[in-house]
Length: 421
Image (cartoon, rainbow, N blue to C red; front, side, top):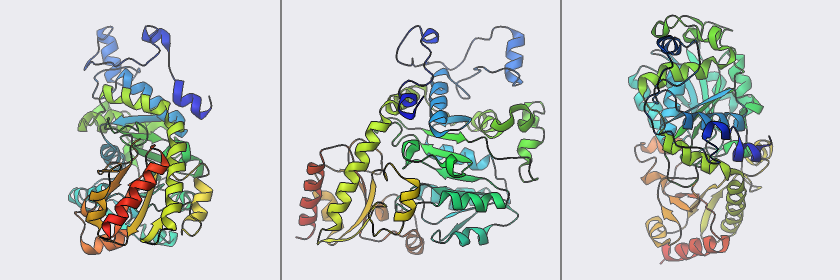
């Protein structure tokens, strides 16, 4: 199936769904075992099947398969949120005393997770200036377990040089993890450029309507966990599952299998079957929505670029953008809906004068949303951390929705005028 067909009908099996043309919601916590032997085999990971919805569920299963297929991976795991997807991914690789290398210009929630919570767990995260790939190379030590980056950075809309990062990671025997939330697999498939693991906040574009929290982890199946002794959690017996060795039992799907059977089981941050159903509905229109998101965002970016009362505009497909060349390489279908700009006026008045744009912290919604990062998503950062993240006091992040572009522009223009009174 081509992308659009997979997004719309992938893995539907009408006979298994009582001929329902829409995926049923399996609102169950547990499952009847065929026999005592069947239950034992399930708990020993000898056969596939559902045990408890904290670990797997038929509604979640089809969502996982479809997302994995759209990204080109061997398997996926849906979680309760994008943050829980990142949490499981990192804890599947790093333990106390280990290190991670990432950019200082990442989503504020991820920054706090890395800088505060992981530090309390004894995992050290090195935040570097990602403008130069050499900074990643210099930050790696024998304790480093991965490089983490965002395809399109949130909120500063920096484009990751995925193939360059993959080369550095693989030269050092570690995987590259890419947060592909803002790009989605429709605009960019990081595995095709060398990434090993992809994470998503499905809350955003994949579900697309601001009504379903969720996350996803996708395993490329390409990283060799046996190439060195950095990842013994995959290559040595797991005592919690009767000594199973994940690379031996699950082959190239070892990472995603351990994510489910170990960490999802223990942490319990599973996705609701109802939210999986809503995410599936979103996936069915993903390609159509992303085309309009990209079209509207580029049109607004060009309008703001010519506006006399806008200090700057950040959008990768503007020719004067510093990441324009990277956008041409990685984002051939469009650069998604996020754009940043600085208002030459009172920022508070600007936001409160908007009528169409919703003042919220979400993104990837069908409705246009405005966010003031310095006062919301990055509020917990110090002044120096804000400077490193590139968040200035005049910076606004817009997630451009699917409304008529003339209405979007009129709303922005009116708010700019009010901000200067």
